[in-house]
Length: 444
Image (cartoon, rainbow, N blue to C red; front, top):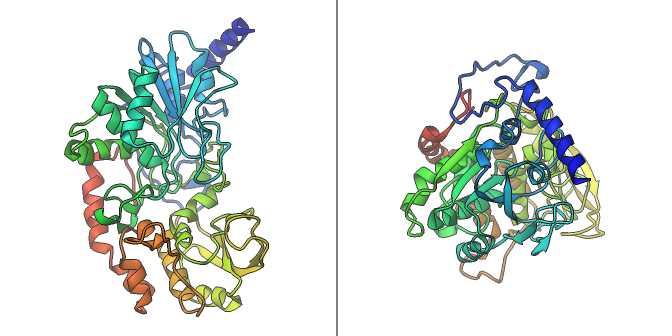
């Protein structure tokens, strides 16, 4: 059986390699592309020609990873374009030596809900050891990487472009530990499903947490490979630990442009987490996740998390007022839903469903600010208050990066005033990240 799998895997890789321009060529540097901005959706953005870094590496028969002890930091999104997981493919490839798999939040195979993981285990399919890396600090990660004997770490996880999505911080901490231990680091890059535009407020150091560990804007507009380069240039050399950059290689995507969206890529959508079922979910998430910091349901426990937003005390007027804004690329439908878990279990919530009408013009963060401004007008609206952190009790401050959004809305600020408050820092962030961007094209 193993011999047949190897033969089949070799045949499949040979077909894949022959189908790609340049065969086994591996692209590590940026290449030029001419952005197209034609209005029809089928002609705008990447048009289905995207090849993630994993497919580029597989087409080269994983040659760049041979002769070293490999750790793989991944989850269910680490797949080839045919949906076969990279670990399953690498495990039967000649010359590869995987010594450990490391799973983030939700686990390597993705069986755990939000805030959970799968624990240390043995992967049934490959019989490789799996280590639980979710929530691990750098000392624990060091123990795990050392125990496994990792010499090169391979990272392949689909991000969704929001600062409070924990995978980008798993990347950051694992890079720091690899720099400390002298472990080489390879990112198999994937598209940012919401494009390359940055937006939202900056994380301030005093409000950092597991949902935002460093000074990054709320919608960062980078791929994981670009983020890794950004971390390596801006943060790791200045950290007290490790105080140096990691030996980093980014295996680029081919065919991706930052003016595109996941809907156009031609890639299968693998939910990065249980509450991220569709590309539309990813597109709204960097905005509507802020409702985690309120007493409104963010739609967890429904079939459309982060698209259904509401509470028992709301009514149809909320949606009417939001539609009156005329926000770009979005319509709000009056909606009623009953969550099966999380907030308001088995209670009818009134609110809205977000319907994206233009995937390019839609602005998730300003849209969510308008929703918060209008929700605050209801007497029963409240910010989530966490007693476990009395010095910083408001979850919205950790999500938004500071007290500013909350205090401005409480003081009666308009949507335009709240959005205007972050314009200067957003401009500075755009300038800061520019040297680390590797995909040409419009970022707006």
